[in-house]
Image 1 (cartoon, rainbow, N blue to C red):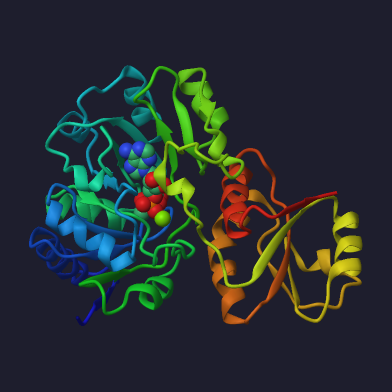
Image 2: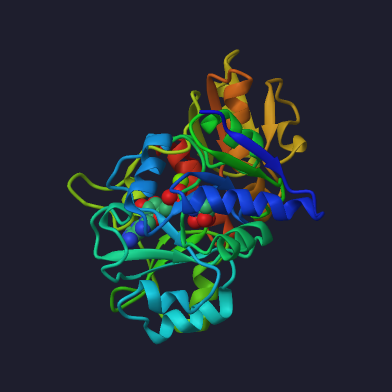
Length: 342
Ligand code: TXA
Ligand code: MG
């Protein structure tokens, strides 16, 4: 199929884009659109046939559930069987924004988008294009990240075009994706809220709002054999470039010493800033001086590594708290859990 690509211009013309996209969604088609975290690949969430197309376009395993995007908090009562007080507190504080809540689902939410789980993931995005698309289309939009399954999530339209062109009906282009890593996921379907995926909203922010939360162990490492992660998406190899990536968890000095001892002509360095590479004569890519910059750049840099044909990559280790934890969690998967701690 030919994919329609339309760019937001902030003029009257945009109205036509939303009309066309809305028509496609209501007719059971697929539309990729920007959000504040990453681009999403949307379909009518309550149309099981439409959302099945998402899995085919991405090559996504059918047991990996989708997030339902809403434009109005009241939609919670339409989709969730129970809306706990903590969900209302979090919605008030962090919505619209980069937060996904897992709640017990109502029957009207098709099993095909929840991987057969009794729960549904719900998010109200703050990006004006996402919000307007959901509102004007009149449907809830089921949307995973708009990448081919296994690849880094898309932070630019170009990434979506490379991955999905010819496989989906429409791409709305507006390169104002800001955060760069996917939303924080918190499971509120059980007694103690559990963070299933770290993101821009951190554990400290949750605890200030609703008290005790737990971090799912799957976030920090690969799971022991036989253990099933609560967020099915966490079990898959993800984000990985073709290169063999190793995270070096160390001081800058120890990083330089390690690279001098183990690097060779095939090595590319993934560092915070240029100055990290002083005295090292190997190609390098910078991914940001602080947590926020790293979150914004990470997925683009992982794609760049493929573009330059990197074979072996040594990466400096991000912080493991705050927004840094979200970066670490993604990089860990890109590295296939290979970490050298010095
Ligand atoms: O920022 C984001 O969340 C982006 C934008 C487009 O909104 N979306 C996104 O979707 O990252 P996706 O499909 O790439 O990641 C969804 C994650 C997966 O790991 C999936 O397993 C988990 O959410 N998930 C969805 N429904 C769930 C449920 N009912 N229980 C547990 N985990 C769930
Ligand atoms: Mg994804």
